[in-house]
Image (cartoon, rainbow, N blue to C red; front, side):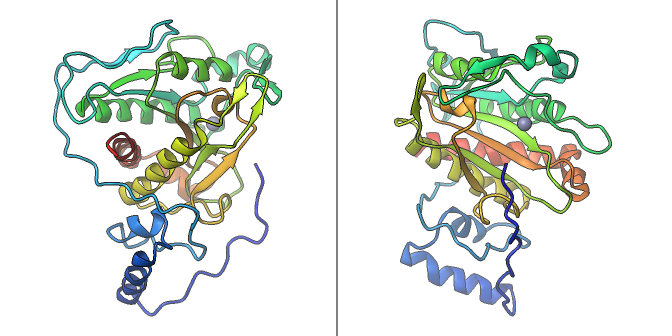
Length: 316
Ligand code: ZN
């Protein structure tokens, strides 16, 4: 993790929300606006766009389709399987037939299995620890608990739209899985989209969420050429919908205000052959972010933002 010592920049001073909206509206037709501007048009008032607007892509997500309950949809815990599963035959809804793999970051048991999770695995570009313990709030709410909770909420939301949802783990194992296995689970499921859910552990004052996209890497077992583009599309849509659903601002310490980061050191991304992103939902070590992350109401909004972003991507 690298930190920008020059952050935060001075936000643009504007005389009021009305002027801001007009200024944004004027920008949109020029195609200079990225996801954040588009989403901020109808987002919560506190989400003013950052000074540096992302201009490398103007992927604009369609609004999420209405939720249609699908009682027949049931969840599946993923297990490595030689034959890809392409959805439940009986499922209905806009995401019927689509497979989403949800990867709850870390494992609540990792703290008790440090020797196992410290074993190195091959991530293509490097060898890296099997997994880490993850972080926690100062009061002890762990990232692993957080990620499992949000993952379960996300599963419910996606299944209501007919998606088949598989987990990399459900706290049903003593530790792990390792990062390379997490990637393989998504690959073997033939996932249409994979999201790995995390919260960060950074310095107090560092706030906000960011979505991590795979870098273009080709080394050993890692070859992300086919997933870089679709993963960026997926990630941008999730970032935009996350802003809208939670009211949280993009990270003020990673990604220059875009809410997006690109990394080549994550085995879970390097080894993926299907579109995949990570999301760091906030900074557990910052008291204000921690207040959000420990709120079940906020976690539901976070899951909704992710579900909306994934729906937008799959329904594009
Ligand atoms: Zn994490």
